[in-house]
Length: 220
Image (cartoon, rainbow, N blue to C red; front, side, top):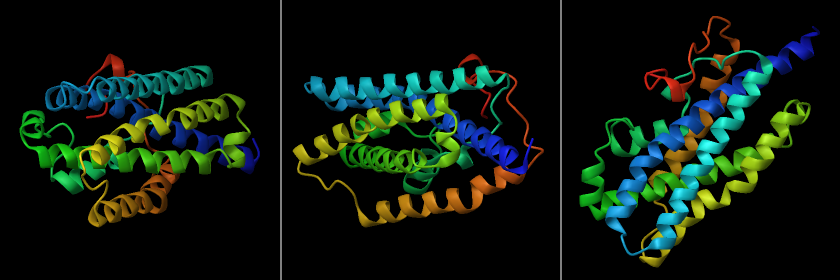
């Protein structure tokens, strides 16, 4: 294998491993977001349906990346929440991990619910911009299956932030605070410039032994 081919294979391996982590984290976490939305907004059927679609799309994306790895004949690299944008965003804004986030407290406190909507909205907007970048990347474009996966993700992305933006707007609430925008930017830059390169160069990073949906503790 040429050096360029080896670089491309490693790049796509790391990229898909991080995406499958984030898609799994997305759809499993959205179960709790749905619980909060149904409790806080019981009369807003369109908003609830949009969040249900968001959850379904994240699960669909997870399965697409899973099939990509199965075609490669290997498991994803084992990454953790330090590679998750939403994980780090929640920790920075709420001061706890996603798993520690108190759903009932979010339901009970309107300000906390609005904050959660803003964090999800900003995360999904960041994801949309990142996919646009990736679809111009020659390494991604060299793999027809992976390129098609990202094209599907790109098509789905607007539906993943617009519902939260729309709800905040209808309520007359701010759609993002400058501290949250700064946190989003800082997390993105730290992932791109530090964390992801570190995974790329670490040849000792192990692979998963089970798929996340088969083992709830696989990313623990």
